[in-house]
Every structure is written in C-alpha cells, then in structure tokens.
Length: 92
Image 1 (cartoon, rainbow, N blue to C red):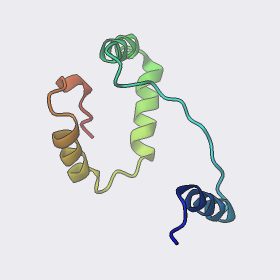
Image 2 (image 1 turned 45 degrees about the vertical axis):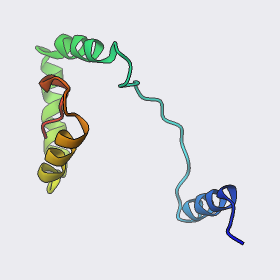
Image 3 (image 1 turned 120 degrees about the vertical axis):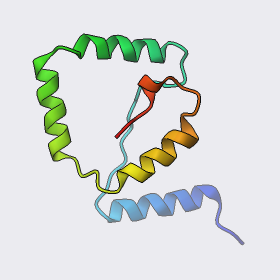
Image 4 (image 1 turned 30 degrees about the vertical axis):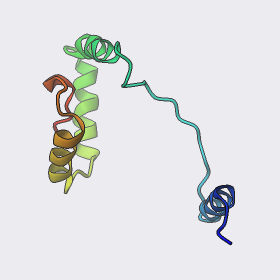
C-alpha cells in the first residue's frame, strides 16, 4: 500500500531535520494583489536617489553568484511574466 501524503511529508521533514535543517515560516508581499505594482513603484521611487541604496545594490551585485542566471532569467521572463509592464520584469 502506498504511503499517505502525511506519511511522505513526515518522512521528508524528518530527513531534512536529520540533515541539519529546520522549517521556518516566511511572509512575503502578495504579488497577485492589484495594488502590488503601484506599491512596488512607490517604494522604488523613494530609494531612487538614496546613496545608501546604491551602496547596498553594489554590495549585493559583488556578493552574488549569478553565473548561469542569464538564460534562466530569459526563459522565466518570457514564460511567467508575459504581459506585465517592463518595470516589473526581472532583468538580471
């Protein structure tokens, strides 16, 4: 008899814990909300001329390992974000 979904999830979580991982809950903005694009633009505009923001973005760029992302980003952009405004499309 096949294991139930609950049993498979329990085993998977036990294996992850055994590997030294732990579950967390992470809340993020709901990008499906109609107000999301406007709020994202508002927050971005507030940071446009902030010198600390430029420093943070430069640090993220230097610390990021993005090798191989170009092709993945192109595929993702074309398949997932078709029809959205260009300002919301990730352009790594």
